[in-house]
Image 1: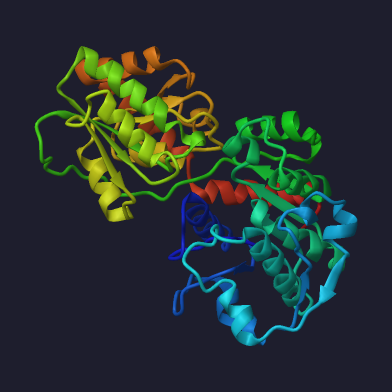
Image 2: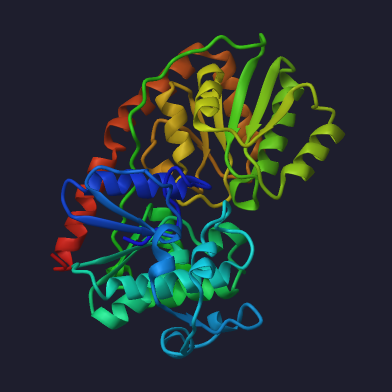
Length: 407
């Protein structure tokens, strides 16, 4: 398995998904997970975890010539990306420093992706394995190189797409890497039918290569905490980027508060939209009812779940949306975008098209005022949770391997 994040070094949901899925799959397969950075002493039962920040200093490798930043990703992959590499001699310090950083997505990401591909493909030469399983675009180049040198089947697990993050018109180097990577792969595993449809529509990939496997979740013990204020609370958790629809949440809050001023809205997360959302909430005079927490660790997030009355996920394009599952686990009724993968498995949630602000606001007002409706939504969602498990996801992936005769 090739991953870009892994606990405790994580930036978002991808690292959690890779950790929880690989743990579940370790009951069915021997797994080596190679990531750019791991934490010394962090172990996962039955998984061989390799962090390049810990071992790369001792590894000889080739690196791609990356001049001007983007050129390699606009070229033909079988030429410029897979074959046109040059030997380069680096010191141990340089090798390790590429991944000995806090933010794996900052700085020269292209160089990190290329560097990761070179090292992992050399590590793979000395390993015995049956399947290459790569998670998202950051590991696609590594998967392609390993497939080329070994002939082993390549599985690409799609947690998110560039068309989700930047819109359908985005056709930059990440899109090109995703497109070529999925064309070369032997099997694609998107996390939802929503993502599978985007793969077919925006990347032109045949449905015959796709096996949808929804994300799972880890069971938690929900609890209620004493809130610090009397008003009811509506919660948003996620990166403050276009994809997650934070500006939609602000508009929904404004609509709700027009009808019921005794509600608080809490937005937990960081991202490019933080400043504009903060300014717009002030311009709308929502300052005393609209709170932005910034980044919160899991303990503090669970505290928010424990004091919230409604969860709202207005994503513009959400491959899955694990935060809605986490909210449902705490018995919070969820109002979620239809443009999400989690809407396929959390049938008990109330759903709206992300642009339909009035419907979302109406759902929230009804849930806050109607205890019968609230109880029904929570009960229906609780039944859905039984089928949202990583063990089930792992079994489906093994079945997909078998259907393609990889095992």
